[in-house]
Length: 179
Image 1 (cartoon, rainbow, N blue to C red):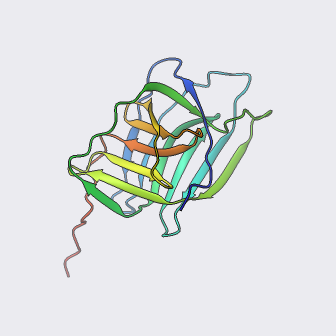
Image 2: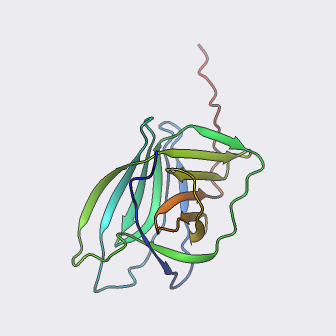
Image 3: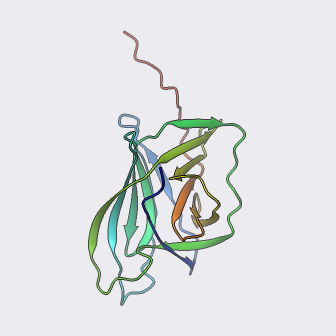
């Protein structure tokens, strides 16, 4: 399935690299990560939105947009995970901010948007590095937006994937409850 569109603008990171905090709820298995990003354009606060990426097989990933900047994501319902060992993230080409929408809005607003796309996930053998691919895998530039979050951007300036680094160990074979 092709990606339905999530066009962004990549800007140089103006300041220190944000620190992302990953949290995994053992009961719900939701993985959440986010970071604070100061508003660098006080006169133009930008859109705050939740962009829900849904897969036809039921996977759901929510991307957090705060004042026009991508500041985190949650994996609510996991796509099927492929274990790849070894698997190492690419070296990012630069540190950057990801702005959405790609064209600034005239006034600040809050939005919720749902996009349908294929979602695929690959996890390293240690369960600490996850590559989440949106739509068909394609050539992309990888940029670092936080210390443990990389974003793949394709040639059409669309988000092609995410690299989540130094995760709390993810076990793809949960222990079954004993009867």
